[in-house]
Amino acid sequence: ESFEFTARGVELGTLPRIELIQISATDISHYSTPGGTVSLHDGTAEITITEGDMNCALSAINIDRVTDLKLRTYRDQISISGKQKLGPLAIAFSLKGTLQVESGSRLQMTDTSLEVAGLIPMPAIAANYVRDELNKWLGEMTDTARMSIPVTYRIVKLEPGRVMVSSH
View 1 (spheres, rainbow, N blue to C red):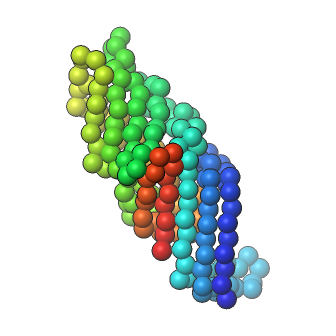
View 2: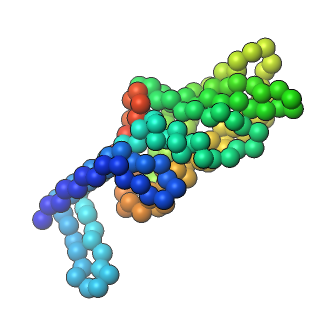
């Protein structure tokens, strides 16, 4: 038996809206008992989340002393900018890097570089704190266990305006 499924505009609780989910499989096992499960084998899954939907989710998080967060995607690169409050000052920053699959179930930002606007440098401890908190959010937001989608991420692809994750 084979199986194909496509869904658009999927909303799963507090997670960002998923623009597109496509799942296909050529080997299906199902159990006809009440509450039984369906297992898909030899298949692929692709999930697309838009930059706008990720920004909506990002606006709902609370990182101590960090404001005005905005995410942008480019070909093979992601940027998250915002302001870090240090005393009476608000230091504008931009973290840039790539996304990689961690443990097959979540995404993490790696190879990060930090750019700071203005003359006042951002202390390394503050930059590391912001990066770690954003990675914590990104990992939780993309965790397949929270989405109840039984896939293992293999490849993440960044394009202008969207993130695409596939499983094979």
